Length: 183
Ligand SMILES: [Zn+2]
Image (cartoon, rainbow, N blue to C red; front, side, top):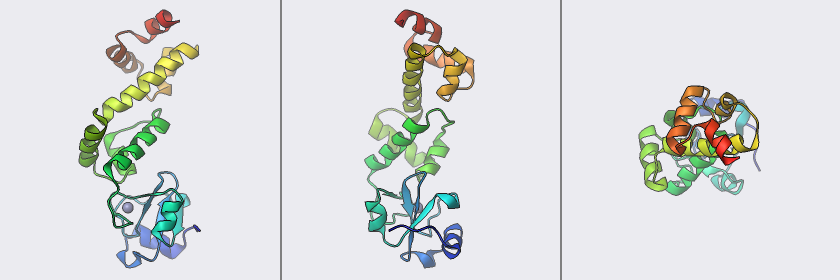
């Protein structure tokens, strides 16, 4: 049902060529989103692209319509959009995550993502990321013998003193005392 991209299609994607809209749709395997050729989102890596002739085919292959170019002609509901972002955070919490990066990946504007996230999740994007990271850090503190610095790195916080400060702020204990008390 899906095919790899041809040179002509790739040129249409990188030039955002609206003349090709309706002729094909491109899906990005790393983000799970599909777009029209004219989409203004940053072009993905060519090796991650799959081509579909019809939007329905992309949908039935579990790709979600892009928020920006709306390839099905309908808006992606906000809750689905935010689920896409939280799914991404759960898989990538160990990497550097910023609002502009997440907006880019989910094909929305940083301003709109910030507002919509807060409205749907009840916490800001940053708080949400910190919460996931601290939960994971607690688990690692109790189940591994890794150093505090290593655990910080595993949850995306390479600055150890920042990791300790944040952990203490959110749990009321330092990582070391959490490890001793809970063991
Ligand atoms: Zn798009």
